[in-house]
Image 1 (tube, rainbow, N blue to C red):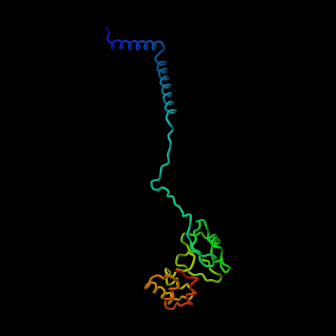
Image 2 (image 1 turned 60 degrees about the horizontal axis):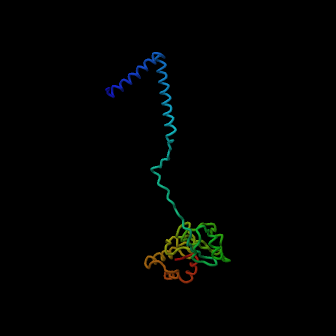
Image 3 (image 1 turned 90 degrees about the vertical axis):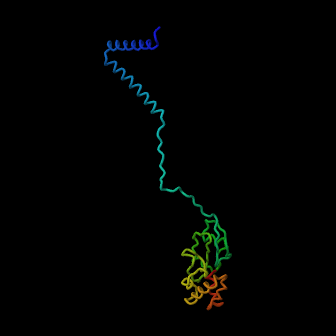
Amino acid sequence: MRAPGAERSTDWRSVAAEAASFARRVGVVPVVVLLGAIGAVVTAGFLTGVRHGAPEPVELPLASAGAPPPIATTQPSMLRVHLAGAVEKPGLYEVPASFRVGDLIDAAGGPTADADTAAVNLAERMRDGQQIYVPVVGEQPVARATGPDASGPLDVNSATAAQLQELPGIGPSLSAAIVAYRAEHGPFATLDALEQVPGIGPSKLSQLRPHAKV
């Protein structure tokens, strides 16, 4: 009985003998060329399958390490503002954030007959907590203690001595007296409390009312 290995060895020898006989009949070079062509076809098919079977690479944008994510900001939809001066219905109003000063005055019934609307920027956008003051014709504007973009009477509780001198009838001595009174007794609760300051009487207080607030 022949061993399995011996039969397999005989088969390979037979294949080798047939190949050698074929090479002698057709020549060595054509065989090599044929084998090379077969190898090229197999390689091309393999590469084609890889090219068509593999997904195309996708380039993703790289996030910048130093750029923080955008932060959404929101603006209030409603504003609470104080309208004072020469208007039909002065007071505290809650209005849409899109309102301008002119819209606010219209909502308050419009200006009075003696209002100087030219002294007010009717197209100004408002901010929450702002006071809008409409003067009468001939009224002199005064400096504001709340900033260059503020509108309205001067706050005597926060104004400096120099700012108080912008008020009608208030000179260096009276402005210093107001500041000294504030430092000793605290802020004024009402404008009438200004009469407690030496040198300010009913007549002076009446002159200050359109230009001052607490």
